[in-house]
Image (tube, protein in one colour):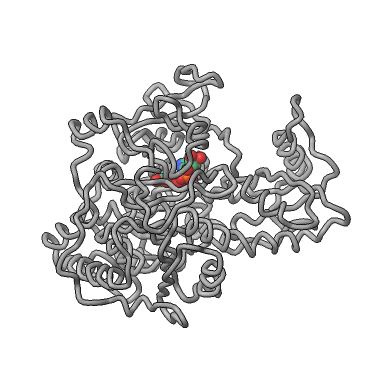
Length: 568
Ligand code: AMP
Ligand code: DBH
C-alpha cells in the first residue's frame, strides 16, 4: 500500500521504521552494533589482506586490493554521472563479480541499492523504481537469452524519477558500465553506521513486493554472527550458486559474510552439478548454499560424479523446508556437514550448528544467531505456547526490522505494537530451543525457496479481459515442495491456459507464472463468505494427488509450460 509518493532526492529514513532508543542502547552495549560500515569494512580487509584472492569469476580473479580499487573507481563514475548519497539505485545483475563491485561502489557513495533478482520483470522493476523514487537502474545486456535492455526501455517509459540506465555489456543507447570505471574521487561521503545501507525485498503476501530497509549496524551484526556460527575465516572458499542478490547468499553468511571473514567467493554461472562440481574440485570450495530442490539434484548427481568433492565441508540448505529424508542423505553422499538455514530478508536467521547431533541437523531448522533474538510461538490470540506445540512465529531482535519501507498500514498488521515481526510461519520449538518449521499462515506459495505472493499473481491475472475472478493456491510437488495453481472464473469463453500464462510471464518473474490453471464456475466459500483457499488447496490436492494416485510432475492438459527458472 503506497502511503506517500517519493521523489528522487527525498530522504527516505523517515519512511523506514527504526528501533526505539532503548533497544539501540541495549544492542550497542551488548557489542552487537559496533559502528562498522560496509565501505570501511572492505577498505580494512584490503589493507590487511591485499593480494589474497577475494573473488573468482571464470577467468577473473580479484584480490581484496583489486576489489577495493574497482569499487572506488565505479563509485567515482557513478558520482560523476550524478548519483549522490541517499539516492536509490535498482540493481538487477546476474551472478558476476561486477555485481559485488557495484554493491561496494554504492555503499561507499551512500547511495541505496534495491536488490532486484534477475528473474524480475516489468511490474516488479517498475514498481521498485517508482515506489522508492529510484534515480538509476543498473542491469546487464542479455543473459540466458533475455534482453534486459528491452526490459529497461519499458520500465523507463513509466518510471518518473529514473534518469539513468547503466548496462553491463553492450549498452546500446544506455550508459555503459565500463565507462564508469574512472579515477577515484578525492573524498567520499561520510557514512554513519545507523544510516540506511540498502533495500532487500520480501517474498511477501501483498500485491507488490515490499521493500526491507537494512542499515549497516544491524546487517553487519548478522554477518558477524553468521561468520562465527559457520566458522568462516580466510581459508573459507564459498561457492555462490543462488542469485547473489537474495538475502540468503548475501548474508547467511553469503558473499558479504565471507568477505567480512576475509574468505573467497567463487561465483557459479549456473547452479547445475556439472558446472558446480567442476568448480568445487578446481577451487577447493569449502562451503555452498542451496535451496532444497537443488540440493536434491546435487545429491543424485554426486552419487556418480568423477569430480573430487572432498574439499566441501559444509552444505547449507534453506529458503524452504528440507525433508528429513533428504537431510539424512547429505553426509553419507557428499561427505560434508549439512547446515539447515531458516531465515528471512526481514531479519531473523536460524542455523543448525556444525557440531549439533546429527538428529538435530536432520530434523530441525536450527536456532537463532543472537542471544537477543526474541522468539515467540503463539496461538491465534497471541498467547505464548509451550515447546512441542505449533504456533505462529513472532520475532524481535538486533537485526530484525521494525517495519517495511513506506507501509504504515501494512506494518500495523505485520508487526505487534511492541515491535515483534509476524513472520507468517508456523513453527514449533523443541525443548532445546531449536525451531521446526511446520507450515505457514501467510497467503504465499514457497516454490522451492522462491516465494510467490498469491495476491500479486491474482492482480496480474485480473488485468486480463477474460478473467472475472481468480484465486492462487499452492499444490504439493515432489521436487519443488510446492507449485502454484490458479483457479480462474472466466468472463465469457475461457481463454487458453497458455495464453494466461504468457500474460503473466510478460509482466512478472517467470517463477510466479501459475504452474497450473483450473477453470471453475464459483469459488467455495468460508462461513463468512470469503473465498476458501483451504478448500481450493484440498480440491487440487485430491483431484491430482489424491489417495491411490501417484504424484506426477508431467504436464497435464491445463499445465502451463514448464518454468525454465525453477529453483534458481
Ligand atoms: P522472505 O521473507 O521473502 O525473505 O522469505 C522468508 C521465508 O522463507 C520464511 O519466512 C519462511 O517462510 C521461508 N523459509 C526460509 N528458510 C526456510 C527453511 N529452512 N524452512 C522452511 N521455510 C523457510
Ligand atoms: O528464504 C529466505 O529469505 C532466507 C533463507 C535462508 C534468508 O533470507 C536467509 C537464509 O537469510
